[in-house]
Amino acid sequence: MTVTHDVRRTVSRLADGRQIIYFDDTAEAPARTAVDSRELGPRAAAGHIRHDALTGDWVAVAGHRMHRTFLPPRDECPLCPTGRGSVPSEVPDADYDVVVFENRFPSYAPVAVDDVSAPEGYLHAPALGRTEVVCFTSDHESTFAALSPHRVRTVVDVWADRTAELGADPDVAHVFCFENRGQEIGVTLHHPHGQVYGYPYVPARTAEMLARATEHHARTGRLLGADLLAAEQADGSRVVLTGEHWTAYVPYAARWPVEVHLAPHRDVPDLVALDDAERDELAHVYLELLRLLDGYFVGDDGASVRLPYIAAWHQAPTRTGRDVSRLLLQVMSVLRGPGKLKYLAGSESGVGGWVTDTRPEAVAARLRELAR
Ligand SMILES: [Zn+2]
Image (cartoon, rainbow, N blue to C red; front, side, top):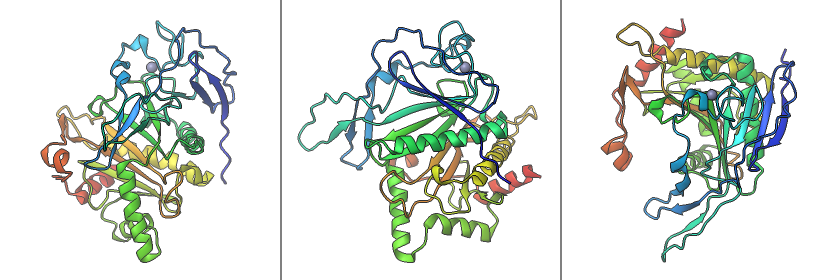
């Protein structure tokens, strides 16, 4: 039987007016009443987005992000609770279970300064939207894979909460929840955290996937995501894990050296639509998947290599294509061997022509071997 997960939600404001929300999942957690005592001045506005006439993509221009915090010393971590380090952090309280706050150096924000004048033929717009930071634990040394299933379940609820709230903002066209782990991916803070972006437009890859799903639905009357899942389940050679509500598989045309997709068995457009049983099982299945990924490569010293990864939640855009989109988690890594990175070089960066030297079936077999 599924019991509704109990999370206490406390909304507050930081010194510059940015929103902070505590999501506490332990009964003994004290009330989160601490006040941000820093003198921050007015909150940073976002910049603008420019339309790339060559490709149709939008590019956010956020010059102030050059000054964002880059790998600060351990005692100046802005994501640790205040009081643990030598300076007040972004989280005023002395502890938290999970906390979300608006990014101090936003690519997209509710306030944006669009002060450029574009030459004839070019388009630009204010970078309105939201960029939020999600801290998974107050433990600086931890990692997502080390969280308890109870905590991961809270994080799933937080992703759903943020998807619903940001999705209701008229400036937000698409909500993207993601985690970058590892310096190889470009992480600038070691504290375990993810991010949520609310874009003012539908990003290029999402738009591309939506166009494919729309075409498939018009032709067959079915959901592309559901047909792909059924094909993977029927074939089985790339399936990594199967539960009652979720299946993980290496996609047929995986482009990254290590890539796994995790799909729900039920047709749902986004995280908000997941029921309690699906959220509960997701917590367990995702942790098991991360355990397998961390065992994938073994270094010369015989120890397994903690896999740097990007975890990307593909959801339906907020107002378009909701009837043809299907939720999907894509976990991918640039690591192609211990200490060896795949670079997106000429073919990939120049023309988007992906080349991979690992067979998806071999990647799945290796992961299944670790699952035993
Ligand atoms: Zn920290």
